[in-house]
Image 1 (spheres, helix red, strand yellow):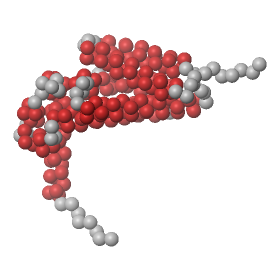
Image 2 (cartoon, one colour):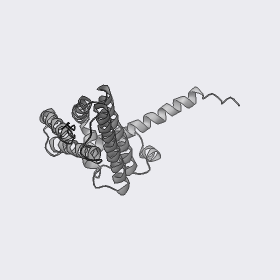
Image 3 (spheres, helix red, strand yellow):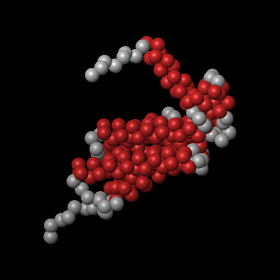
Image 4 (cartoon, helix red, strand yellow):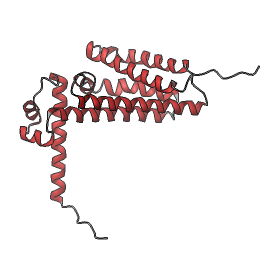
Length: 220
């Protein structure tokens, strides 16, 4: 097998510069989409915010829609990673499910309001490609939570009310957490209340999970 030619330092530097420009442009788009709105932001404004030429922006992103889709992919990945990490810390337990829910509000919603704005407001009602990306994330997140509930079931050696219980609970959890974030952070700026309602929302969803656990059979 022939040895591959080593990459030169100059090539590595150019690669780092390309990655940095990509990151700078994406960060600029995130800031402007959250501040002004997706529809109200132009590619020229993104270029100005990123301190690059508009041609450079179009080199990396052929149209504005591509920027929004890239942001959705990134935001969706970050949320799923955060929740998965918190769940695994508690070894697939109800405490893990609780900690994951609280981390979503504390470590994501409160720390990254721009990302929440983009995902739950600016991306809604856009093109089919954007909606497809939103749907993909929501389906993946629902699947993650479904798998977590199955792991809890297996670890506790319990059963749920039906073969659809885990999926139904996951759909409800995703919907409730999204709606709470929208209501208290986007529609009504009440970030000071978010952890209070977060604890209530998490307790509410955990009670729902316990409510679908079948009681163990007792001997006659």
